[in-house]
Amino acid sequence: MLSRIAGTEPPVLDVALVGSCVSLGRQAGLRQFARKDDSALNVYFGGRVGAAHKELTCKLGVAKIRREARKPGSLLWAKGGPRPAGSSDVDCAAVHGHLKRMT
Image (tube, rainbow, N blue to C red; front, side, top):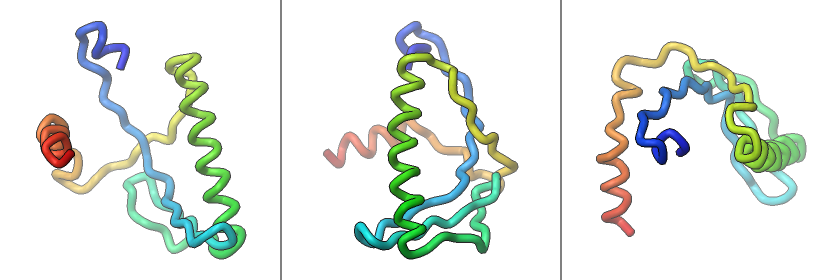
């Protein structure tokens, strides 16, 4: 955002998706892990452990956003791996325009 305000192009982010969470209520959840190329692993936490892991993930996400706001560039992120061809060819302006029309 700071680079946009300064009128410069922001650097390309290479961030790995390390997994995803699904909430199944306060007592149950699912956390599945992924490889650096965003493909799912056959490893997951389910039930109460999955719910606790999801809750921790959400709390850490908010804490990381706050920290990055105070000290830009202070966080370390897992680097992404090679992606399938064409997976990163997203026209963000077109997506933003589409979302804006929907609201």
